[in-house]
Length: 333
Image (cartoon, rainbow, N blue to C red; front, side, top):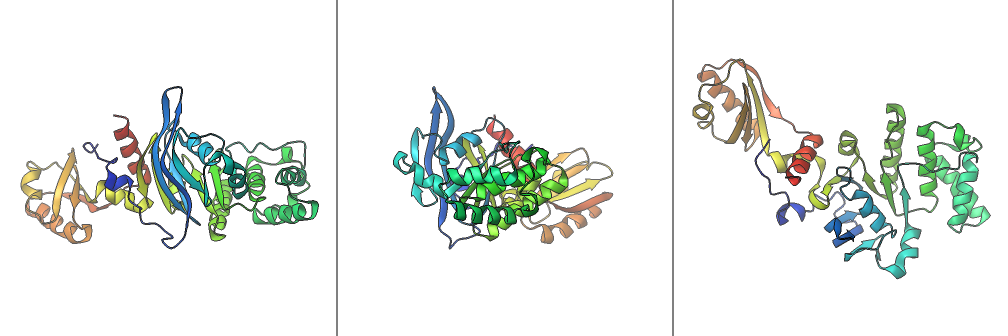
């Protein structure tokens, strides 16, 4: 592992992370948002700025405070301190009803009435939204069309696969025409085909300028879907685009695998301009460099001159999982 990181330094946490919609207004803003339960701090001074129309991943281990954060933003809990704005509305008790009109929450478990048809499930929730019969029917049809379930509207919810139930839950979340959607593990337990369908639906929401606040443990999925991600464990650890977090944390790196370890790697690598550091494991070396494309050829020449037998040499690409594990493990120390 790398040495101790300063991921909580103001320059990291406060970074905009390359906002994908710099001209768009903010959909969710929190300043010092904090929640305590009987002396235990579940959310500690959270600062976020989520822009309208982006898919924002909120990542962290179990018990990190992710669900508590969503419940705060959805007005289901009151913060202990700090402020927030959701869908343009300040998060204060008297604004709870107006905020709930502008958002929707899809929990991990769909929570459908299994003995009712798809259409009747949605009709029930349309009434809870205060929609009249004609407007309710129009929105139900539009929501089912958005999730490609118009032809299954009369099927009993209990006869549907888990993937189809997730689609119904998404349709239910769309009934209120939300500006912000909070999705909690929307592909949990789904097979690859159903997961792909849900991911396509999330991309469709972004195309409709809906802000998606996504909690998930599927890091590859988050890297593929999200404009930006936040790594959170009670406090905000890092935030930014998935690709830039790797560079920010690990820098540009070149990986080298040799048939035999170098007798004196310092003697070889210290002579190569652009190599700023390295770490070693047996005959594998990971070099921190200023620019991989410029430095890699020079590294190869230095190794050949040292008589090394090169098995592999190339730019190292760290995944979002690498970043996540490094940040979470460092934060637990």
